[in-house]
Length: 274
Image (cartoon, rainbow, N blue to C red):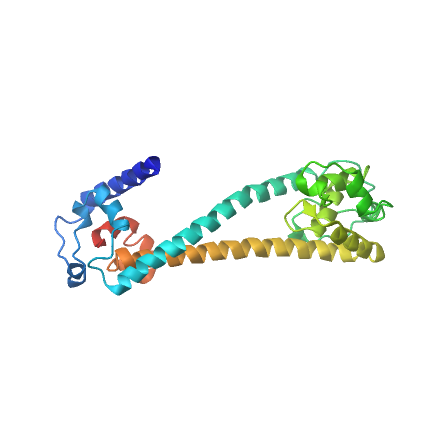
């Protein structure tokens, strides 16, 4: 905790020093700031600024108190969501790399391709003969799960993992195996066996449904990422709005965000701290 405290103090000290170098020598306090019994942040020690973040509600209006509480609510929510997002993005990046690495891997029967939509994000199209070899595998999904490796808890509990699916389809094209499994689950390597078997049965009846299922799976994944980013951005905006109304309500940049982050700029905020 002391480590993070030192980092925050250092950042505040650097920000205050920059403002003192460029700001006017004196600033006339406004009635609004006098109402809050404010002090010019240009002359405040970074320790005082940090302490004011967690100061009590004495001398503040109800609107400022409410805004500060909103800030902490949205800040905690955005921080938790950002932690989840940060843990997922490396996995998604590795998935993309792994799929691209399968472009020229393994055997292929060649011939006519199925016509994958470019939005699926695969490095090349898939041969119809390779797809038929996978979906016409005489082994059932249940048998593949039983015979496959049990390298994690879910595999031991009877779920179908990607490694088991690959092991249960020897001699098949790796990129095709990846594509088929991606229709079973969205952005994961584990799926319920009954779901996988149901989809495989559908592809056997009509192989043309496969490419639509793959596109649908990818679009769901993109929509989930887009929704997550939107919600994180919304939480950040609401958190910043709470901070603006709670600690520096007279900062002129707050009236025309996001342009205000540059003009007058974030570095001018301490001049309006209450």
